[in-house]
Image (tube, rainbow, N blue to C red; front, side):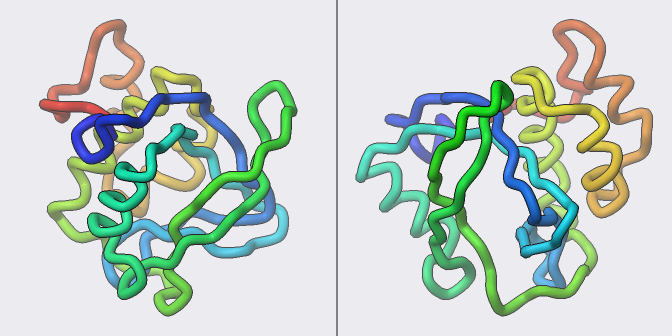
Length: 152
């Protein structure tokens, strides 16, 4: 995030209820309404320049659209946040090979910031073709699992 949005500041991990994270048929991450599921992610403040850069990086409006969604911080505090969603590609697909390392780095960063390991196990390992040993590498103090040169 620091590379794409240099003015951004990490706020917290957070939970979006009744949505599900998945890899779409485009080969990239998406979220979709799904009663009973949840999405965990990282919340950042963004400058207007950061948001404009992120819009370009995410391909707004061609690949993703921006939505305002309610989330909960780990202590239960509610917030309203900006999320990028793809309303056209809603079917599970196969991850693009080049995307695996970027997502692995993001997961490692999120785990260090408190993302629940149970969430990673339930939703992310299989679609990203990461074995359970990925979490073993992630849990070693100071380890990046050898995957990330510049973690988020």
